[in-house]
Image (cartoon, rainbow, N blue to C red; front, side, top):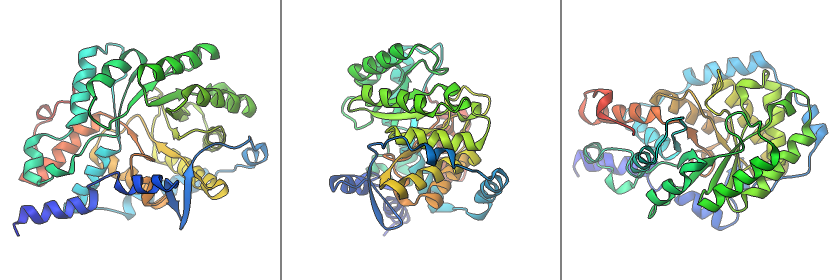
Length: 353
């Protein structure tokens, strides 16, 4: 057996067929497993204010744990390549710029369909894996453009809605925006909460707001952006996470990418532990999406390690884990090419859009 064939089989075993296990679980009603217990998709619960008010977070302990996470674990060589391929499958390829155009979105969708160059795939022997990204995320205006560009694939279109990024438009307008995006073909909706509800401890109002967003989504998945960089404390982050899950969020997401502080590991640790606590209490699984500031292959590995250690293998799949990033894809391609050739390529060889 050739060396390339051996590598292909190893990588296929570790990273290929990315949704097979998840699809099998969903067919039986369960979408995840945690500590031996099968979990179903989140249906939401009534608002438990006692649970929310009892939240306490030891900030120094969280920061120490997050700091040691990246020093206690490492992956090398073929294993690293497998993890990087997994990172690509969990990526929401995103463009949310004021100068977005139909042509830019079409180029982004072409990259989503084939995120790794043909040359690199051939050198690694991974062509048969069919690696694609987790979703393409755009403004509402470009949902239909993205949907048409992705026809024939299983890549969903995600739309940012509800007055993104501030979330300060009237509630009726935000709900109407969600409905228009779903009608245009969006299969996932990323919504922004009203941060003032968190500052004022108005948990009932926050819960009602997210329930209204969930109802407007219909069959589409709801990803709730907390804007953690604006929430000031880790306690606020955990409380907002719990309320969002109680209200029926399919995913909780760190940031819009527009805050001064976006996805950082201490916040991720608090949110994943909230997901674990919610799963243990309710038997329901909620996904997690860090977004903003994730630009390198190394960072993608750090987030995957966090998911594996805190939530387990079920959260290493696109149906429960996404990274809102685009810039890191070029760096991952450079790492893949280095593994295949022993040489780092220039960044311009891996254009995104």
